[in-house]
Image (tube, rainbow, N blue to C red; front, side, top):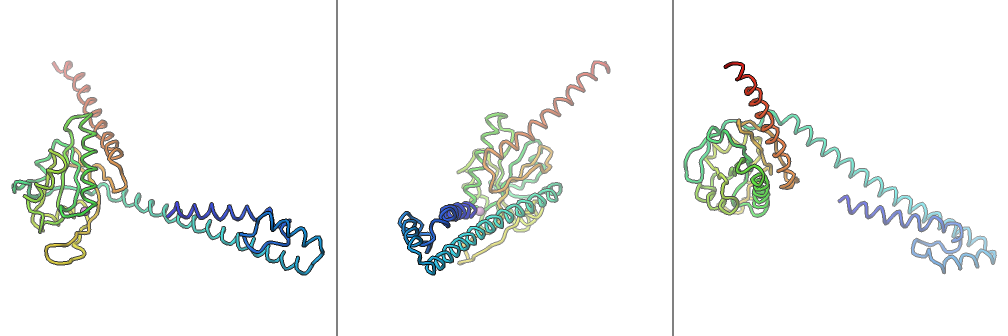
Amino acid sequence: MLSISSRAIRHASRLLFANLPKIQPQVGGGHAFASAGKDAGAQAKTEADSGESRKVNENVQLTWKSAIFTCCVGGFCIWYYDYLKDRKESESRAITTQERIGVPRLGGAFELVDRKGKTVTDKDFLGQYLLIYFGFTFCPDICPQEMEKQTRAIEMLEAEFGPIATPVFISVDPKRDLPAIVDDYCKEFHPRIVGLTGTPEQIKKVSRAYRVYYNEGLKTDDADYLVDHSIIHYFIGKNGKFLDFFGKNMTAKEMADKMRGYIRQDQESTKQRKQRRGVESPDEE
Ligand code: NI
């Protein structure tokens, strides 16, 4: 949208500046933007010289009309561009506000079913960082893209820290996403990915904890439907506490950079704690 409108502005301002300097000499020939050429200028001069003052006056009016018209178009484009910019800014402000309010209360305890049909809880994951994505295996395009992004981000961390963070997929389509289906789906992405599903009640609970929105939309028939859902990755600390979330606009690298920041911060504070203990322990002996 923005790129189109800025192109429109460029176009309009080119017209505007192409016309303005010609307003004076173009006295005779200013019908519209199109006639702003050499011929028109030449014609203008001959007509002005021959003293047809009434015609000249009409044409002066026409030129001014076209100048005013150009200004109006240009003005509108600038206004529209500002309007779009304002709207985009206020949208991003809304997201930041939501972020600030939402961060501390996300996540928490959950009970779900893994790819083998075994019940697992949040306690089973303590001691590892988690990158959780909520989606459904029948999702035609967005979920596969996001899962690939998740895998890439995890691999970037792997390259630096080893298998420090576990990718997790949680289904928001418990009716169709049975453990075996989730298992098949997850195999396509990352060897360490933990695919989770559950009863509709379990899924509702974990989605509520993470404020994940999902809704069965567009029901064509019983077996073939799409689930409308929020597209967010959640980064969870080793202590099971929520650290950050990453939206659809973020790239794998941006996600990895953010997660790396948290991991390094944790490693630094662990090191400092150890150093403090290291200094204290000789005193104690
Ligand atoms: Ni999806």
